[in-house]
Length: 193
Image (cartoon, rainbow, N blue to C red; front, side):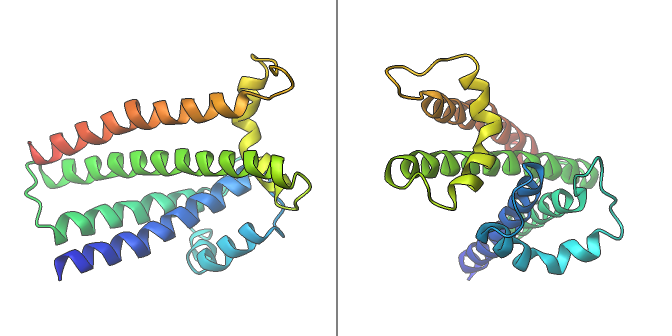
């Protein structure tokens, strides 16, 4: 029964925090609001984002309420997992909340890296199979801020753009070292083991 509760919490709240994060990032890259992904993400997050905007102001054109909702949803998810699994926490209440906040930020960073990996793979496949697909402009908008970093430093080799490969390798390195290491360190601090 406990495992089912944990699974359900991870599924529902995980999808919701992913949707909030995607909505925030799509706004950052100025994706067209009529693309299917934006329409879907807005449809499942409007119930929380619209009321939250009344209390959390935007900043320089960015909808901070959406990012805050992603963070709070991730905090709720982690709290529920800790409670349902009966984890023995070795810290005070305030410290526990701060560590859960940090763990939530790390989880969102990990989720964001996976978003970039999926977008990059999808863009690479579509560029070979159907480069004129309507979704290509969305994938390009989402990956360009990161691909451009490598495109400025590395020229195509034999007409092949290696920036996709460099970005994927960099994402894997981020997942292995800073993100995993931070997550492990915070959990050890929280549980004392």
